[in-house]
Image (cartoon, rainbow, N blue to C red):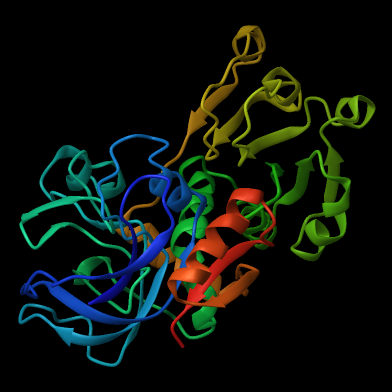
Length: 344
């Protein structure tokens, strides 16, 4: 397969070819049409989190056409358009898998950087490629109504921001704040608005107000405006934080929540510090969320199709040069709002 890989940490993406593992009975082979570029791809290429294995082929927001199917595959057919996200397998017999929360399986398989035990392809390789082979269970048919070029980021930014609303039982009429407005935040705003929530964007960037309202926000709050923040004290039912920066004064966000309110983090600062007094006296919950279960991904895709929830994307032709350009734009935070590499 022709692909694009980082051969060592913190080095540019270059052309790469590999001999794939033989197609298994439960797998499909895809001709990749496009792949989104996520901030976590940049972290992996740089080995910021440790544990990256090289050569590393990034990419976990994959859209492609089924070219081949294994003998046990029943639900997918050659010619179908499918999407593949960050997870491509689980052990299927642990407590988490048995209760339908495969994303929490400690032995999950990821679309790239998971050891395979096969010498000529020692790790799973991702969507910066012309083809890929994956477990058919984790290749999701893309419903009519979702533009193919927009579908990839939904499998990452979409699932990441969909699950918090589901697991925290957010409902129509709730007052919801989306903290941070970028690749994750602009998806979260659409979900909250289309679910019937009173939806606010809370950000430091005054320039984003017009676009926030275009995506469905009913209100806009500058987080560095103390008077504006104070107006909304103890009025929010739920806050979803997409913030990845350090140094956030979390107490300012706690003050926005009603008693029994919840703040859920999907952004990944390297550290979070706060004094717990406001959590304790107002019985608040500070929680996290990670990806989505197999069943929730299906529901999320259909919700997107039914409600016209799509990411705003910038697209470049998929090649090594453009992969590096895309990662650079992600690093500089100049993408509005998701980056996509296309083979079409």
